[in-house]
Length: 281
Figure 1 (cartoon, rainbow, N blue to C red):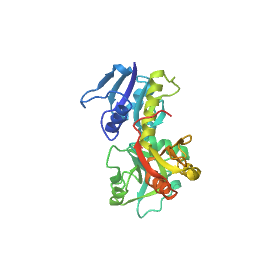
Figure 2: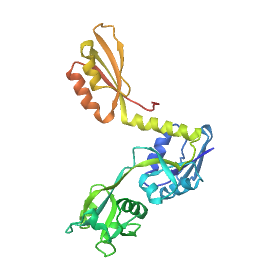
Figure 3: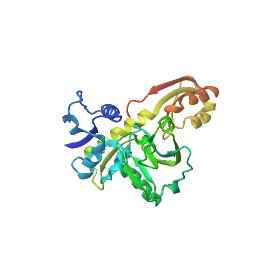
Figure 4: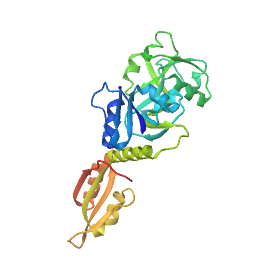
């Protein structure tokens, strides 16, 4: 039976459970449950601390898990990313006092406070920079003012917290993170895990796209297909009205209204948008 780790709390927990349900797997109804066995799909789900998941998977105790890309890298576990899930996004940046003129090269020899020492050390090593990484479990923004560090590396969303602490962002992002499915490095992908990945990929794709149907005069079909090329190509069907056809194509959800406007402008009518709940592509 396939053993999968799922975050038991935090920002990734609810959305991990939601996507697994959409993919057809049973999930716990009581947050105190530590294990759930889905006999129909031959999967055991283990609900663990997000920071520990990569360790369990990397050691081979569990075949796969859902965690953050940041936590995977920070753990230095022997595990690889298999699939990005499109939620739980975060961006890691360096920040220094607002009255400083820090550049990336200036980090050398300085003290960098962070709650993700493994991630930051890995990034600095990739840049060939040696610095003293100071591990903190919280309130990283206060470390510079309290004299513990010269700069910080932390998750940044709006930057308001940094500004309140007298800090400013500098340099390129350290990492853009999101929820990912991981498995042990160099391990064989067993059939049950392959099915899980295929199902989750179907949900991820379904969340990104909608199905667009519309009618259009034959003379404008080429223009319409340029607007809605679909994933492979659009489906075109004849209508009872001989000089018109019906077109169906998948389009990115974020572009839906723009695409509808463009289709209407060239003569398309009866434009309908349908949600996709799951797919295999």
